[in-house]
Amino acid sequence: MRSRVNFLIGARRGKVIWLALFSILSGLAEAVTLALVAQVAATLVTKAKRVLIHVGPLHANAPVGTLILVALALSLVRLALQFPLSILPAQITADVQAALRMTLFHAFARASWGEQSRDREGQLQDTMTSQVMQATGGALQTTMLITTLLTFLVLLVSAFALNAVAAAIVMAASALMFGLLRPLRAVGVRNARALSRSQLQYAGAAAEAIRVAEETHAFGVAAVQEKRLGRYIETSRHLFFRTQMLAKLISNLYQSLIYLLLVGGLGGLYLAGRGHVSSLGAVVLLLLRAGSNGQQVTACYQGLSQSIPFIERVQDAAGRYEESSPVVGAVPLSKVRTLAFENVSFSYRPGRPVLSDISFEMSGSQAIGIIGPSGAGKSTLVQILLQLRTPEEGRYLVNGAPTELYDRADWHRLVSYVPQEPRLLHASVADNIRYFRDLDDEAVGRAARLARIHDEIMGWANGYDTIVGPRADAVSGGQQQRICLARALAARPEVLVLDEPTSALDPHSETLIQESLSALKHELTLFIIAHRMSTLDTCDRVMVIVDGRLVAFDTRDRLQSQNHYYRNASLIAAGASGTARP
Ligand code: ATP
Image (cartoon, rainbow, N blue to C red; front, side, top):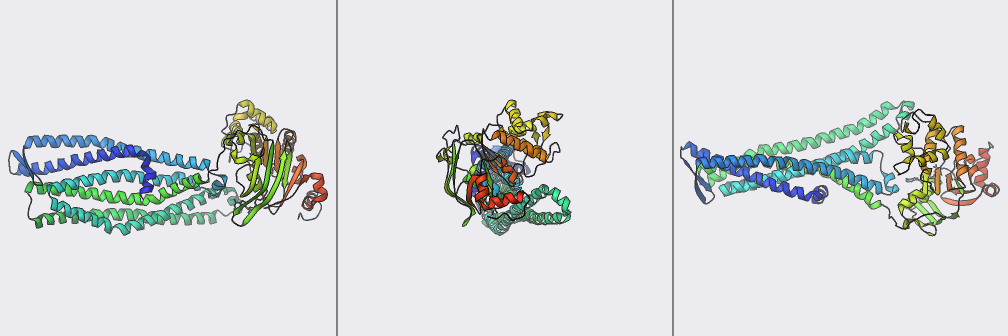
């Protein structure tokens, strides 16, 4: 638990120390006020003018009026201390929440694509929102635990000073009660762990339901999907009920046990057979307050224990992302002259290679097509080309040196990508093309012209300020694809990788993209995954990937005469019968 709490509030040590200090001062002010009130009250009953104070073996004598003034001053001090005691926990908790979110996103943003893509849908959102909220609850419980525990101890020590026997009995009984409630606390933690897991599953299912809403409508399976989500909601409800119930039960049990403590303390006094009337009242008052603080200590400890699984989840996620963060080089890269794979192999799961022993080299501006059956490993190869994944074996060389040596910012400027599925931000067309990079309007316009989308944008009422994005109707699929092409071209890359840029396009958009690629191929190195043979028209050479192996890399003419897979695929594309098999 200590390492989790340290992860949570370790960076806020200064504020925690101040909180502890103010808590001790407030506890002391309360203890002395209570002791004075009890002893002055006992004296007033006897109508005496002076109070005989008994603190353990020490005795003192002071006027009633003076002691009332002292008690008043201490009450005011305690009142003033409530400001920092309220502000500091709120500050610490708010800081912790913001820091957890920043830490998580910072780690996620720097994680490898392999790690990012392993996350279930909705996992990061849930971790950054509800799991962080509950972990933050742990920070609040920690601050409250500090305050209540220190107050409890100060009150007990004060009671000890007044009457050692009674206080010792109460202290021993408190420790015993804390120990007795331990099994219940352990059940609470187990429940909280299961709740954290179940919340993630629920978030994943909810995110997925949103993504496939259109298909759900089309297939008329909303009721089944609702039932599935309902199961996750029910599991979370059950676990949430159990964690809340246990937290309440432990706190209430403790509250009722306080009276046993009190009676125990009095019993101790009786058995010891000593004590003054005035100090007896003070001890009873102090023990009552100590009991109530003890109850809060238990409740806070329980609350903190139950947030540990959420803290663990956040900490583990951040650690997992950080660990996967790729090594970043510092060698400047001003131009990509050659690209080469040397015996590159890759597998997602041990012993099941997806790419095996791939070697090729290329230089200059060329358009390279990549074809092969579904599942052959084309996208995986492209992800290695983009440095989204690292070869398991073999080397990936740029200008003769391993890619990981180069500065990442240079790499991202020189090598660009258009995914198969266009993904737009909910933002203006200009911002979608700019994509968080420092590019001026001229660069945006130039890229849009190259992608053959500029004229259409200018025809829209708001031009480049038109808001587009997921579920915005402003643009068609073909336009979205060309906006993504413009995004890829905006920073003037030297290498452009496209994952089947035309497969889902209308003939008009397809022609425009083909035109654009033909114009670009003299300026850039193009890698184009092609699911349609017509896409290869632009290409100088074509890689044929079958079962994770590069079985041919040649011109289209030579492949037509020498490669079985290519020939068959061409025949199918031309409408002839036959099956495209290598
Ligand atoms: P397609 O033409 O259908 O897009 P592809 O040639 O691009 O296929 P890849 O997507 O590279 O093929 O997939 C190659 C193999 O790797 C497939 O068997 C696929 O199941 C597997 N694979 C792809 N991505 C992952 C992943 N993230 N985790 C595990 N296996 C994966």
